[in-house]
Image 1 (cartoon, chains in turn orange, yellow):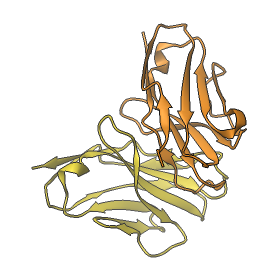
Image 2 (cartoon, one colour; image 1 turned 60 degrees about the vertical axis):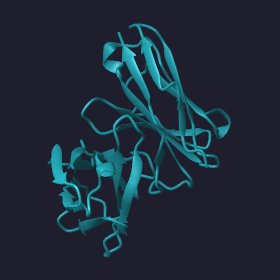
Image 3 (cartoon, chains in turn blue, brown; image 1 turned 30 degrees about the vertical axis):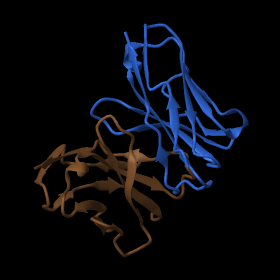
Image 4 (cartoon, helix red, strand yellow; image 1 turned 135 degrees about the vertical axis):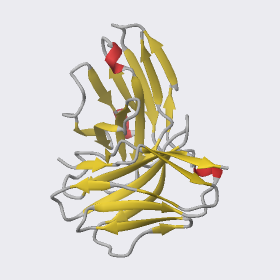
Length: 115
Length: 117
C-alpha cells in the first residue's frame, strides 16, 4: 500500500493564473476528499467523491474552484484565476468504503503560493 | 453546524512525561465519530486514534488514549511516556453519521505539542 500521493508538492504561481493539482488515492479506496488548510488552522472540507460521482460541492470556496475524478481513480482540483487568498495547503484524503465515518488517510498536500 | 474547539494552541511536556490535549465539540447528532490526527512538521497528517460515540469504552492505541465524555462533549487525548517523535500539531476532528459524508471532517485549530528533551 503506497498511501495517498499528491502532485505537485509545491506550486508557485502568479495571480490570475490557473493551477491544477492531482491526487492519487490508496488503491481501491472509493471515497476521495479535498481539504484546504491555511496557516494556523485545521483543514477545511471542500468536496468529496464516491467513486466518480461528486456528491458534495457546495463547500467549494467559489466558482473558480472545480474538481473531477474521472473513472473513479485519481482526482484533480483546479483553481482558475488564482488570487493571493488562495495561498494555502491543499490536502487530499481517501477512505475505503462509502461511509462517512470511515477513517480518512491523508496525502502530503500541495502547497500553493500565489504571488 | 458542528464545531470543534481546541483551547490549547501550544503545549509543552518533558520527554517520558504524560500530557493531555483538550478538545470539545458541539453537535446535535447522537451518532458520530471523533478522531485525533497528528501532523508532524512538513509531513502528512496521520491518524492517531478514533472513537465511536456509541461506545462507552475509551479508545486506546499503545501510548495514546482518549477520555471521551459524551454528555460533556469532551474528547481529550492523553499521551503517556512522551517521546521526541511525538512533537507535532495535533488536530481533533469530528464526523457525523447522519451527513453521509456531506460535511467531511470538521477539524479544530490544532495544538502544537513540544517535547522537551
